[in-house]
Each structure stands twice: as C-alpha cells, then as structure tokens.
Length: 264
Image (cartoon, rainbow, N blue to C red):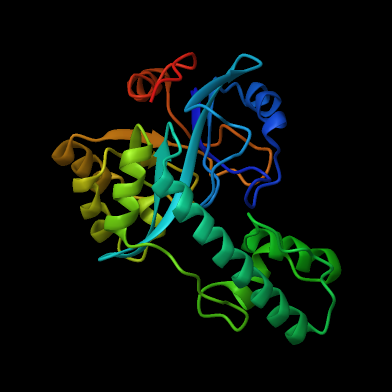
C-alpha cells in the first residue's frame, strides 16, 4: 500500500495539478504524504521543508537535472530550505528554460505550420509544449515527444545544466535528503547507480512502462546505506501509482524536519 508519493509536479513547473489540489488528489489515492518536486524550481507557496495541508503532509522538494559521468541524470532533493546558492542556480536554470522553451516553440510552429498560442513562462517544460501541440493538431501526446521534441528529434533544443558534483553539493546544503531519481530510465542504469555512493537515497519505486530487475538497486542500497524513495512522477492529478509503504515512509520522515520546525 502506497502511503507516501514522493515525486509529483505542479503547475509551478510542467504539471497540471496546483498545490491547492494536492490534498484532494492524495485522499483519492489513499496517500498520506506527497513531495512536490518541480523541475529545477522551488514552489513559491511552500515556505518550509514540510507542511501539513488539509491533513496531508507536503514535502517541499525539487528535481534537478545534472550532467554526470553516467550521462544526464535527475536528482531529487527533499526537505528544502532555500540557500543563496540554490536560489542563484534555480534563477539561472529558469532563465535558460524560458529561452529554450521559446526556441522549441518556434521550431515546432515552423515545422508544423501552426500557431501554438502558448506563453513560455518560468516553469515551462516539454510536457507543456506537447499539450499545446495536441490542442491544435492530430498528434497524440507521446507522438509529440517521439517525433518532434525528444532528445535528437528535429525540434529539440538542449539546455544548460549543472555538473553532478555542483548540483549534488548545492542540494546537500539545502535539503535534508538527496537521492537519485528513476535509475532505470537512463541508458546505463548500473552506471547511474554508482552515483549513489555520494547520495542519501535512491528512487526504488517508480511507474515504469516495463518491469525492471531491481537487484542493482537493492545492491546499491546495501552498499551505500541508502534510504529508498518512490513516487508517481505525477504530471497530472493521479497520485499513488508508486511510492513508499508505511515503514519506508517512516524512515524517510525521520530525516525530514518537523512541520513546526522553522529553524535553519
């Protein structure tokens, strides 16, 4: 039974769910805790590492893409307290995301001969672009990625990202817990898992479209004394598709500040 869904995105980045909608979505899924992990961005309405909203524990998190020896991977930071270094990094990444988003919109419009009527603002991501394409064409959501905007496709534009060492160090100072996201989404999962030697956790539970052999994750957990995390990576309103059970959530919860604790 999923008690904690520790990977969800809101309209603050490229999700469809607002912060206010999280408690209701959590109750529908029978989930007690949700981590908001917007891409390269902190949620402006979350001013503490953890809060209680309508009986649901909301963890302030972030998903940060970094360049590592294993390629580009995503780090999940939980229990965020904003530091000057993290604020500067997020500001830089959001400027770059806006520039990249505008360039991709122009490429898609030129290639398809359409007007997407979309405004590129901070937090804009490729799912936003895909939804805009679906609204005015016959493309399906996944087709937009597969044919137009995935890495290597004709409308893709790369973006600036920090190194693994820099990103990890900044998150480690700002967050109570830093882990590797969805290891089996990378080209070389075992290489990505070697990075956990410098992390606190790994995302063990994730709604992959296939059934991975989790033995490498179990080995990394044991070798590096990691906590396990998990979540739905929700970009819509569906929570609870993956996450932690009660005991696993309790282990993570012990590492996070109490909601009433506002100290540094």
